Image 1 (tube, rainbow, N blue to C red):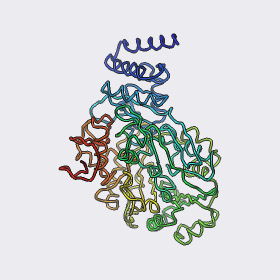
Image 2 (cartoon, rainbow, N blue to C red; image 1 turned 180 degrees about the vertical axis):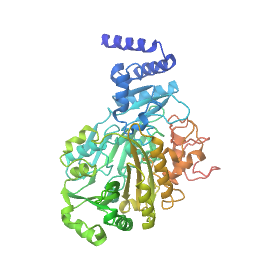
Image 3 (cartoon, one colour; image 1 turned 90 degrees about the vertical axis):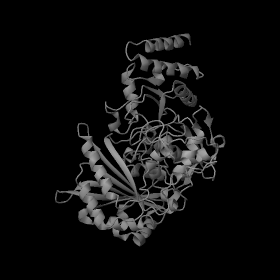
Image 4 (tube, rainbow, N blue to C red; image 1 turned 45 degrees about the vertical axis):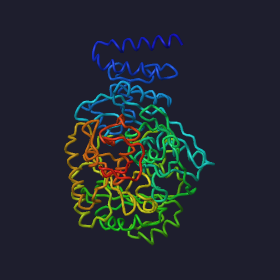
Length: 551
């Protein structure tokens, strides 16, 4: 014990009196000392603290470990002064307390899939030093089949959660994302959709409790945080209200056998007419059926570049009933029995994620993706009216101008249309045909501007057909093009430019909750919710001069 403490003191001494960057080192050292002061046991510096100068190799390795978008790891991007990897939940409390005492910004990462990288880097035009709190080591999962529930820590991935559920039961599942390496903590804060959304809604619709560390460093469950905050954290976006420690999720029934298929259509085989028909039926079809459209470039039989639309589906049932549904509602796709594959629900997770068929479900426990990381830019839209064939043809022309574009159209309807917009902050419900994800990616050495300009042109073109007033967007596909906070104190009106797109009328209530639970705006980032210039004790139905519900 004595040698452990002496080593820690030695590390601190070296750390504090290093020759360069004295101010930054002082902040880092003070944070380290503060964490130990607020922890039950001394934490060895080398196991949980990483800096770009003291242990640069480990720092870069940890920073890159779950960062999915290489664009935000470029040397020009602002990096954290220090990465603190929490090993137990009380470390999260200490991190909040210490960052607040030192008046330094705290950013929090659970899975690293933020499109704009704001969980682990900064896009602020003015340099704002920050510390990164990494939750990757907090990944415990406790499944209770008798209660139809599970407690999952924020650092666990979606794939790990799926596997642990299937380990206990072949007829239980959870309606979260299609990407298995997503961190469950941040994923659910934005709503979280997957291939069972038409049957059961979002992952956030199926949360029954949570644990969060607030701006005072307190751990709050649902009973302690109150219904306003519990409402806000299920879809109100990450990084505004506190540090999410764990979710208690409600498991949903799945059949022992499900059916999947993928049917491709190119421009030469009727892609335009089939996609036009899909827009009229995919959100109205049997709610056991989810058919998304994955749009990529391809080579035609004549060797020319063309567009391929792949109709990838999950059906909660067997092939015979699926064929009846498709022949009745969507015969234009031409689905045959040979296209259909029956499997267990956990195997369908592997299939929908796009992994090879020989990958076993145990792979999900690695918490990683098989696909290489890339530089990318993403945007989103919601359709409430079908895009006509002439509109699709114009979209194809723009699509074929880009090197590596990707569009994914995800159908809504079913349960998504039955849940009211104000049930949780995620408002994109009744009347939505589908959500569109736009992606362009590139490799090192290419001009990012070229690709980003292309996706902005495509987004501008699609504005004719997308939802309006506001043009809706998905907060988990964060897009700083929509607007961003210029500093730590944005106004209600400034933030509403993007806030209304993500949350529609729920934005007002979210701001009131934010003001109530974090009145000093400790938790902030480029698109965090603002606070109001007056005190909010509780959220109710009275109107004030801002037109907001407060009392």
